Image (cartoon, rainbow, N blue to C red; front, top):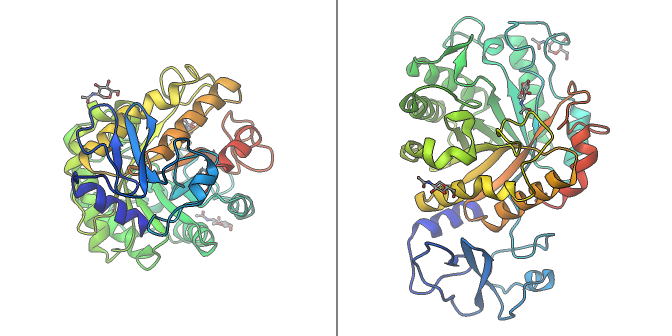
Length: 387
Ligand SMILES: *[C@@H]1O[C@H](CO)[C@@H](O)[C@H](O)[C@H]1NC(C)=O
Ligand SMILES: *[C@@H]1O[C@H](CO)[C@@H](O)[C@H](O)[C@H]1NC(C)=O
Ligand SMILES: CC(=O)N[C@H]1CO[C@H](CO)[C@@H](O)[C@@H]1O
């Protein structure tokens, strides 16, 4: 609830004095620079200052925990001055493996998440799991045809395990805006696919619908129309309580969002529960294919434009994929990224590491317990940010 209240406050416009937790300064900011009684304007970064409880001039964790009764509930964090994420977790990858081999064989081409590994992560506070799957396996014939019962059952079991444990499951059709390799242009069929999928999960409010993974190299207007068709289809299924995560063109990159995906601000949802999911890797081409980060500030540098876009348009965002290699430059860059997202929690609702899953082996970012490279090098760092 705090989430929607904050979104409402933000879109309400500038006040004579900035209220609790509102912006009160930063480059290009034109609103009030003073805070209501009981709060003071605290510099967070060059682009954002925020009204926080108290009158002290330095921010400490203890200042944070002694919040006044009128302030939103807050808890102490490794990042003083920032609120907790709503969603923080990892991608669960496996059911979409074996791309191009359809339907493929379970246990050979693809696999579903390992519930024990998911539980290990939940026990440590991670609360969000993006479960990737392949549309070609769920609907082998056409986008509008009925589901493969076995694949649907296994996917549903994974989702239910996550949500029964109190976490969030993000349903991720990992299809890049394509079906059997062809760009999806039939928005009506795409809408029907999403209606049929949402019907399966309409009563589970811990499910989050992701419209598709990483649209890329396709018409910008088509990306907008496909996202809107998915939203309309999901709501038409009677799935009205759930969040919908929309993705943009150009692999949904945060670093190119403000120049590439500006048209996405036109998306509408009668339930007003849209979240803009962006992805961000920190290697030179932003592809997440090497363990080398450009520099230790690159995390913030790559998302700052998106932060400003979200705020300027009154939208909420989430980093649906990020990662860094097992080295100190990347660890500093990832820390900077996560601190920035938390500090700007009026527009950023969380972040998900790419990726856990049973079959990653020695993959540079594997977050699969107990020995994945990402898990062993980043778990203690990431755990500081769990909600
Ligand atoms: C579903 O999972 C079971 C194992 O739990 C497996 O035997 C079966 O082949 C799977 N089917 C599909 C379509 O994923
Ligand atoms: C996008 O964001 C970048 C990084 O902050 C900024 O330099 C650029 O001017 C922005 N472009 C637009 C069109 O807003
Ligand atoms: C950046 C990254 O990790 N991309 C991966 C996306 O998922 C597919 C499998 O689903 C991998 O092959 C990619 O390496």
